[in-house]
Amino acid sequence: MGLFTRTKKIAGWMAISFHEDGIYAAFVKRLPAAAPEVGLVAFYPAGRVEASEPLEKLCKELHADRYSCSTLLAPGEYQILSVDAPNVPPAELKTAIRWRLKDLLDYHIDDAMIDVLDIPPEKNAPARNHSMHAVAARNQLIEQRVALFGQAKIPLSVIDIPEMAQRNISALLEPEGRGVALLSFDSEGGLLTVTCSGELYLSRRIDVKLPHLMQSNADERNACYDRVALELQRSLDHLDRQYHFIALSKLVLSPLGESSFDLQEYLAANLYMPVEALNLETVLDITKVPELKSLETQQRYFLTLGAALRHEEKVL
Image 1 (cartoon, rainbow, N blue to C red):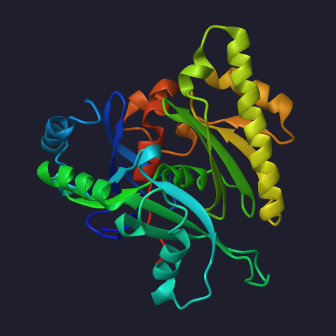
Image 2 (cartoon, rainbow, N blue to C red; image 1 turned 90 degrees about the vertical axis):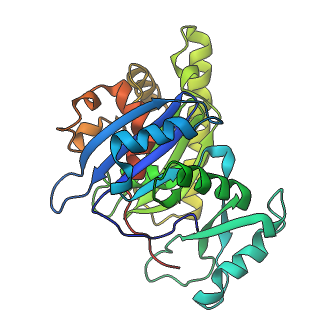
């Protein structure tokens, strides 16, 4: 199974993700000429290691076998690297990428599962210096994840990554012809993505966790804000050098509960672009899941909802 294996079953996706406190599930159905509809969200307390029993419970209670299902890797379970696109026929692309990654991984390339995502170059520009995202994960980890879902009798179609889940939400926020930077935080840290025309151009991890942004000590909290602003400025400067043809319209801050407003105000005062706080109600139909009106609940399910917004990737 590749990281982005393509399997069709029913309209919409159920995404199932593992976090420190348990297992999160969300089902989203994309509709023509309407906001994507969230059909359900659910949470099952569990540890990362002992997840088989709650996963089986999830399958029974949510009838997961009726859905096309995906899961998300955690940040430490994969690497995403930007590489120059090799000048080879499509059939030889992954082999060529494997060769380029062999000295960049901390384990043998034969033990890695590799997938590739294109980064579209500037329109009407020469194809030189064309880049791609290469995603690598250990075969053993992928096999264990597939076996875990198999044991729970959940038909796992896709193993995805948080960057692509966040890309799916960012694509809903883009003004025509312009890009969007989206910044989210959870218990594992911050994630910045930049998208344009629904394509992921840049992603950066920021070593500031959600609890750091919520601490009561104002000096320590502001020090975290400083770190976030500095990392953002560095990343956006890199974007401007590498992808000068992308006109960023704004930075959007994911739902963070009460922390959203202070951080939004701070970043707006320290960056050169508009900074908006996201409420998922503006881009998703949450009529069937009124609990998502809470910004705290939106934060908990943010990447799981993004994964459930998945649409078929281009074959490379």
